[in-house]
Amino acid sequence: MKSPRLLVCTRFSPLGQSGTATYLFGILRHLRSRGFRITICWSEQPAIVWRRGWWVVPREIAQTATLLLPGGICLGRLRLFPRALVGPWKKRLRAALKRALLALGLGPVLGLREPPSPGAPGTASLAELYPWNRPPDPYEEAFFGRALARLRPDAVLANYCWLDPVFRQAPPGAPCLKISLTYDLCHLYSTLVDGRIVQVEGQTLDRETETAYLREADLIVAIREDDAAAFRRLLPGKEVLTVHPSFPAAPCRRAPLPHRVLFVAADNEPNREGIAWFLREAWPQVRAAHPAAELHVCGTIGQRISPREPGVLVRGFVDSLQDVYEEAAVVIVPLLRGSGVKIKLMEALAHGKACVSTPIGVEGVPALDGCVCVAGRAGEFAAHVARLLSGAEARRALEERALATVATRFSPEACCGPLAARMLQTAR
Image (cartoon, rainbow, N blue to C red; front, top):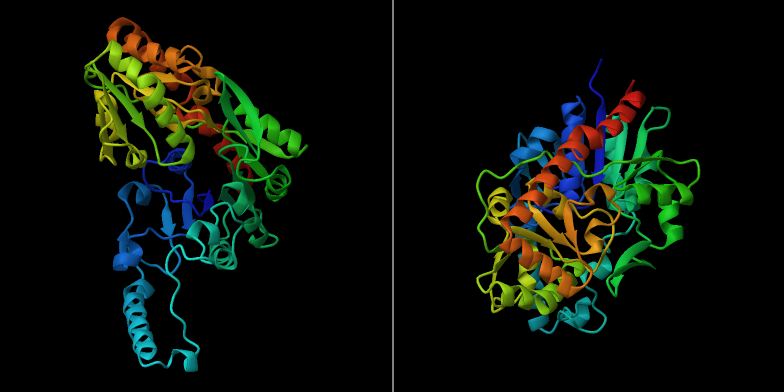
């Protein structure tokens, strides 16, 4: 039997240490192990492309999928971008010519105007001009459409529901399973009020828009069971499958440093709010109980933290999260709002770490009961961290439960196996 083909359409980067990339690649790695040939169409190039005009696909991605970028020429793992190589010189030449004409006073005659300064009235930011949750624009439709027509895949996966309109470009007559990969309910999010979870509407899309996007799919993939139930209520009769984030258990090889606390996160608003709350309300209490306690912050969230915070070391991007997790005695997830599944919490548990989280961090994943210390108020949160720093026995008990739960409930086969089986049905 021929290998089934999957096309992934994404606007977000499939690279790096973000939770979204971790979730997506957990699925793709399992599908690759089941014999799928995978192509990823990424409509936004890495920023470095426009600085030097070439880029090398990371080995981990190359081993899992073929990566296509608009305007790129593939030479093994090397990607060349002719426009990026030539473009800066053309831009500089045009700018120099325009400056010369303006200096000669010929601007009004030729219809030239001085460019607006950044932040001037009437100028828009990139985020305003190109919102991240927009539907596919004509440029993306053409890029994804060409790949669909050429590859004629057995399945096409849209990474986030707002790319679901790309399904309309699937070649007519050819069987192709259209999969919408969701990370949360876009029209709802959870927030912590007086230590308890409250549902709030109006996160990234309204209910009607999200429903319209999802209607384009044959199969909706939910990240947790209560999201799946909500999708079934929104679209009765639509096929919905839950695929939890999968992680191979990776127990640490050495004892943690006794006073080390760890926070790993990307720079987004919920993480900024959460770490600010922890540093303001809980960390002083932890330090009062354990003056030697150190908080290490990894990931892009570090750029939001003052280097003068007592006992805090901002490490930013790190080459090996394995080493960082091994050094940590306690991992914190101090979120005050959020949705979906907290990938970094799951990742820490897969490394056998003792974790302290707010109720937001464990929401929607009942299997985590007993694996994580949960507290909705700053005093309780700090007390859990302090207790685990001083109590090696309690910490080891949590570590053992974390590894056992990941091995039995969140292995790649347990999480992704049903999706692979469903996709193989269509491929046959």
